[in-house]
Length: 59
Image 1 (tube, rainbow, N blue to C red):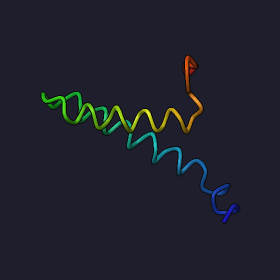
Image 2 (cartoon, helix red, strand yellow; image 1 turned 135 degrees about the horizontal axis):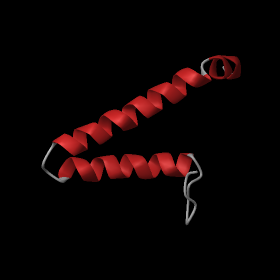
Image 3 (cartoon, one colour; image 1 turned 90 degrees about the vertical axis):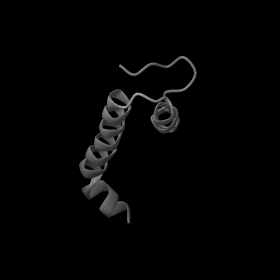
Image 4 (cartoon, one colour; image 1 turned 135 degrees about the vertical axis):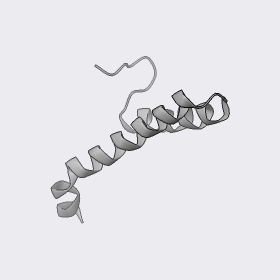
């Protein structure tokens, strides 16, 4: 299992960034704020996974 994750690490990163990019585009082109709230929650979860907590900002 660990071998699989190591071998496909860049595939996972590509998939995650594609999901976030697609969600950002969706919220940019839709006028309502309901989907903005959903994407904000997803972004918060990804920030915690990336250890961007408290006042830490991505470089």
